[in-house]
Length: 367
Length: 94
Image (cartoon, rainbow over all chains, first blue to last red; front, top):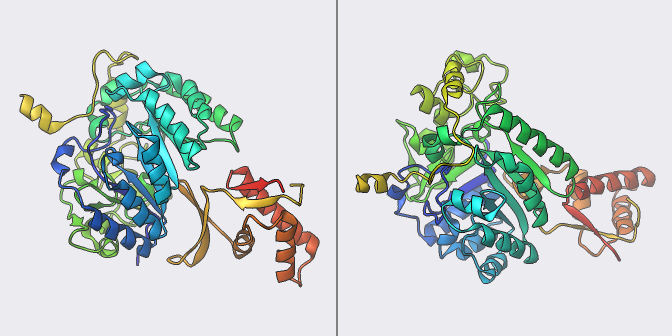
């Protein structure tokens, strides 16, 4: 019997007022507009708590676009869950944050795109940065825990020091410096977003030094850049092992990108209880444990350290989701990553034009 | 950790609870879970914001008459200091 999940990622909507090019939502995000209603989400949250989930992360898209967010936070807290809101903070008022706090919200994670208004707003495609900083202050003054998250890539890595200073100045207790992972829109924009090795190395040196300086005051988390390490990311800490994702239309997934994989048998929380999906849903079983692994992974002594890496990346690069993640130097396909890294034309450090998240339906209509 | 009159209290962002699915006490924090030993759970349960550090040590010592008070006192201080270093426990002045 599989151990219970520790965390539920509740992607309430894929709608978002920001248009960040590195977005991990699927390119056809508009096809998921049939969102779960309040009652169904409330049931899912209770089922999650019963199953052993401790954290719920309300995310998206932008979860603030759901007018029932306060009700969902309350339902989660009543079920005993620790509640986290992952948000752009776009347009949020102090009154709404206070209402969310009253509903039991424990922790708010606010994204920033860069360290100054002009650059951050250009990356977000929305004038949002100045308000984010104000809203982060409200989170603190209302007594909720605050994290800042910055997704890092070619166009902001050089300012990692300024981003750290910004997070420190707003009083964040945690800062996630998350190097872009190559999924969804980010994958389509890979050539424009991929940093060069020197910029990455300087940024990492700054981040690790600042982490020491800020120890005990602000947790600085450096999420390792994929493609520049010898070992792959231990994606989701293993498939169907610790994390469960429910996307806006109710599909339950082992990772937030799994619906991009072929041949999966998706269960929907509208039809089945969360616990049954976790325990014996076909897609949760598919890459759980080590039995599915190729000999490369199955005989490797790191098989239960990085779990074969990322299934979505294996599929995106090799066409076979069950292969070893090509980001691993032991992968027979590692030359793919090496060649892509080498062949990539160096994009300018400042974006030349608008660079926004992919929107397949909009593209189709325009053509 | 000096100042035994100070009152140790769990930070608002850290929540102490029983994890029924895994049959253990935990402190849930943003993006993480601290799994507690039985001793850790016993100490954490005493952090009600009313008891001083001295009173917490007294209560642990009372529950363990077999143990040397001096050793218990060191254990309690070390445990609380570890949580305080990570911002999960604060020490309120009396």
